[in-house]
Length: 70
Image (cartoon, rainbow, N blue to C red; front, side):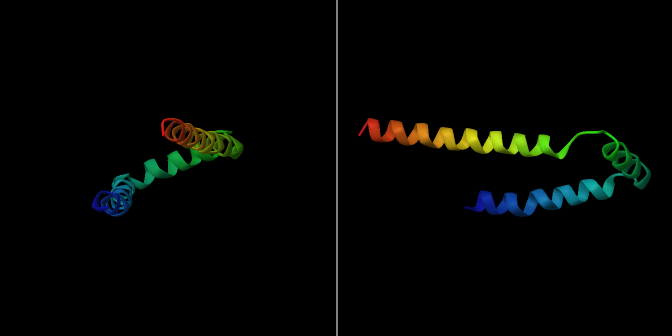
């Protein structure tokens, strides 16, 4: 339980610190490059759907094995 709580607090704080340490000019250039990269948002949705599908498949396999070995 403490490990999850730690992750919920430390990870966002670390990200905020990392973003603050990036010089403004570098951040502006990175945002311009990201906006003009031409990567479609649907790629992210497809990737997320694949991850969710993989987790569902893994849980189903584990459930099958648990009920099979009972």
